[in-house]
Image (cartoon, rainbow, N blue to C red; front, side, top):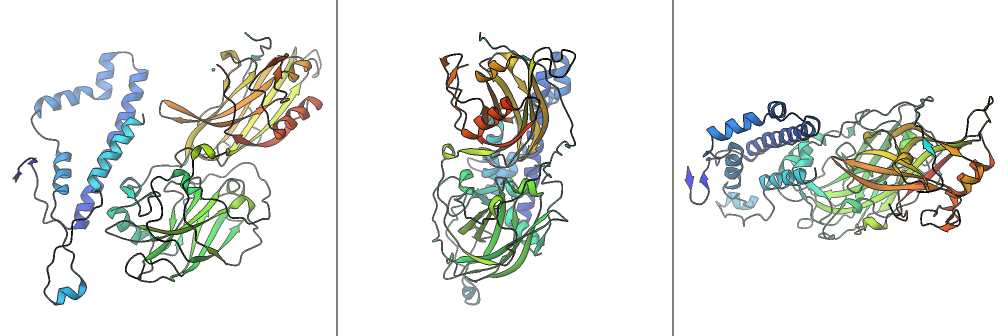
Length: 532
């Protein structure tokens, strides 16, 4: 059929909402494949210098021939999308009106069309595509002391994460029609298991502090818009337990009480959980939906496969939502717990007041995780036979725990090191990129030589953590190990700004030559930018 101003469209009015959702899911898969192919072509363009071979390998010849043959034909995907957008308005009649023969048409819905959202997200994906006196010579080495390499966890988002819209209080992008349909299936069981490979086991073990405290809203770091579309009230009853044999975190959600009414003195609530800062689909868990109640009883256990060391950097976020299959899910309140300070002997359920989210500025974050490392100074000739020839500084980067990216979710990270004041390329060393994890294991040793003990009082070991996103890199933060005097060889320098903990590590290394100094330091975001 032909419609004025739209061109040739398909008549899809006979399709049900579920059938149209299935079509959109196919379009989603097509969009994902296109994005992957664009990434493959970009990689080929960087590696292949022969234009003829590049044209063949990239498939450009095929696209050229197709454009010649179908120059005047509208893309089939666009036709289907336009046809779905043109669908007839939904008829919404009250249940009582059905028996009275009413067929009143509901006012047009204000939510954004799913196909338009898909095109917006496609566009977003396409747009997202360092002569001083001290001159130590870098000699990188790699060790493997009983530390396993991390497994890359799968971070492909589900179709429900792709088709998303902003929820009622403007916090995060919530489920659309397809995601809601998926939720009814996934929430039918109270026991939700996590794929063991999706949350990697950390390699360092540390004891957990025995204090349970509530934190400010970490989820708001990845939020946008305004909050408070529905009044936040009520409380939630839940408990935590950790199975050390299975390395599983159990979140037992019991019930909620006195929730806010989202629809005419009622709500259809469910509880959603994240282990922040991971806000990907791998971290998301949900309970079932309880219909028409302000005091729902769930009695469900949400399970996470995660090691003790990795839990140290996580924050449990439990939020309550009103489920609206054909509209926007509405935020009803949340609770957050820092797992590093939780008392794991406390296993019985407690009530927690639900609180609204507060908009949080990314620049206000003082730490983006912790860095686990060891450092050692080997004086010249200390190993016998005149070896080493000069003093050597060894920095063993073990791992990072609980990295916090600017967008949430797993990240691809690496660590770059300098020994200042030498900021030349010869002083720069890097670890490999560890992909798709918030707690990467680097297990990399940097070695710098050419040192005398007196040089250590003037030097600074700078270690910075970077997030690689396509061809771009983003600084997350770092540490600086130095005496922290603000001076280097008598000259004031901005980078001699170490904290008390960092100064203590550097001082201990100078006082104990030939000994590894083990430490765990915060990845600071307030490093003073030094001139290049």
